[in-house]
Amino acid sequence: MNEQDRAEAVRLTYSVESEREFDEVLKDVDRKIEENGFRVLFVHDVQKTMQEKGFAFERYKIVELCNAKLAYKVLQADLEIGLMLPCKINVYEKDGKRHISGMLPTLISEFFPNADLGSAPQEVEAIIKKIIDEVK
Image (cartoon, rainbow, N blue to C red; front, side):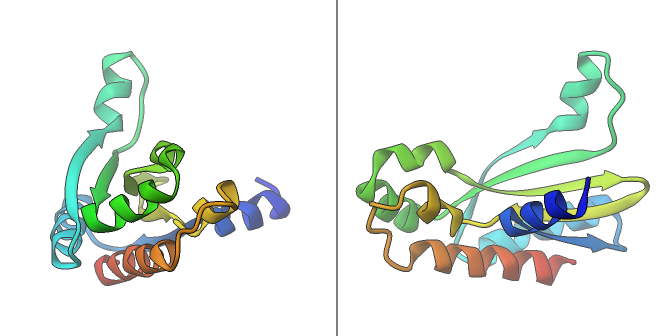
């Protein structure tokens, strides 16, 4: 990935490395999501899915999270925003290191500039960053 691509990816996501064990990180992500007023909707085991299809893949889980009150607010502004919901936090291994990342919800405003989202994207983004930082 060249420097410009990395800068773009950084703008789209918030990512950190963790020295902690994968399962500990995942457990704490779930706990912190609940503590911050969100709910875990589903955890996708990407590694398992890839292995079932014959592909070697390091551990990778996608944790879907939602806060119904905030989701309701943005969906009232534009139902198409549902394409970007629920929010996700990824926990994965790459080259033996653990990573925690989330997409920045403020991007919703760029994709839906005419939707009146108020401060919801900023609120959710702050919580996602807080969860990631606390789990790191």
